[in-house]
Structure formats: structure tokens, C-alpha cells
Image 1 (cartoon, rainbow, N blue to C red):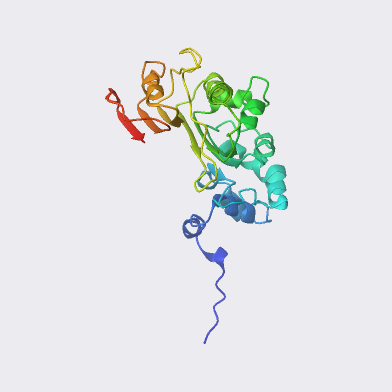
Image 2: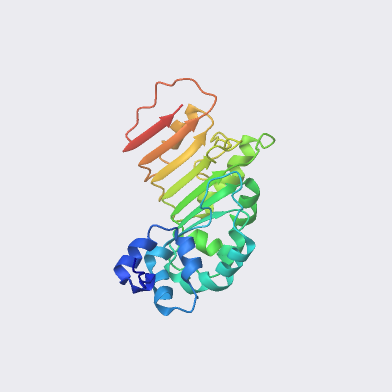
Amino acid sequence: MLRSNFHLLDLPNEILLIILKKLDNIDVLYSLSGINNERLDILAQQKIFTNILNFVPALTDDVYSIPASILDRFCFDILPRVHYNVKCLILDSVHMTRILLAADYPCLGQLKFFNFSQDIALSYFTDQSSFQHIFRQQITDLSLICNEDTSKTSVKSYAKNIYRHILTLFKNLTHLSIIKLAGGQYECQPLSLSNLSLSSFSSSTLTNLSISLNSIEDCLSLLDGRLKQLSTLIIIVYGTQNHSMLDHNMVNLHVIL
């Protein structure tokens, strides 16, 4: 049998791209960036591989599984070279600071945080945060995946420390999702509007909202005009009974009881 001397690099760029698209963007960047092959380096830095960077590729019990050596290389070498293409970052709370400080992200508009907690909000969702400019000016889509024991945290304090802070800081937010980790041990602390004034929890930009609520009355309060552009509401309501006043002029309304 004749042996072929055919090499992967003999393939045209179009075929190489088809192959590379089957891999995670993180794997493509880590494997091909800076390997002393200009052609592969250029391919790896294309927008298709740098627009969305998912640093939590597997939803397992251990979401902090990125080896330190890989994270170091991204922060010191790869992210500073591709940062201008990044539109979405998917992070866990442990590595959030390092990755956000690794480079400027002028096109970043979407953030997804795993293992989000009240401590993260109190530390970073403030006017004193190192990232307040990005949060305030750039982020339009924010997803928070919680896996925190909130049994000793009051609904009132959580509403003020989390929900109010988010709408106060993220001025251009159009999509907000605060949900529990799939298969996680803990539920999200539901939002109660009874302790928040209309002005302290309102938005003129938010169009899509997915959260947990404390009661049906809180659902109705969300529809009182405080969220002027809201078109899609997805909620889980805790500790409530059926209510006859759910009919409202919404484009989409998903209520999970």
C-alpha cells in the first residue's frame, strides 16, 4: 500500500476552516495561536473564533477546571492579541477578574457569569469597580448563573444588593437573565418588589427579562410601566397561588409556576 505524504496544511483555508469550526473557540486559539506558523495564526484570529470565548466549556460540578497554565497563556498572550474581536465572554467567578483585566474589549457587549453570588455583585457591580465603564457603557446582554446558598440572606437585602444594583449600573442593558445553575444545589433568591420603589427598579432599555419572583404580585408590579420596553418576560414564581390577573399586553409572556 502506498503511503500518502499528505499533510493537514496542504488543505486550502476553506477546508481548514470547516474542520476548525468543529472545535471550541478556546481550543482553536490555544492550539494555533503563536505556534510559529503565520497561516494558522491568522486563521485562529479570525472573528469566527474570537467573537465568543467560553471559558466554562463543560457544565460539570467543577467549573473551575481551566488549568493555570492555559489561563496564564490566554491572559498574557492570546487575549491581548484578539481582544478587539471579542463580543461575548462566558466566565466563572473565580477567573472573572483576571480575564477582564487581561485586555481592553472595545466590542464586548455580552457577559455570562457562572457561580454568580451576592459577594460578586457587592464587589464589582458598583461605581468603584475597575470594570464599571464596561458594565455601564458596553454591556447590553447579561446572564448570571447562580449556585449560592442564600438561605441566610433576606429577600429584601438581595433585592437591593443584586437586582437594584444591576439596573442602576448597567445603563444600556436590553437582556437580563438571573437563573440557577442547571443541576445546581441551590435556587436563585427570588426578586421581591415590595421593598423597592418604582424608580429604584426600572429601565428604559430592558426588553428581555428572565428571573425568579417572590409572588404573582411581583409579576404584576413588573408590568406597571417601570420596564418601558419589556417585550419578553420569563419567570419562575415561588410561594404563590394561581392569580386571575396575568393577562397583559405583552409580546411574549412565559410564566413558570
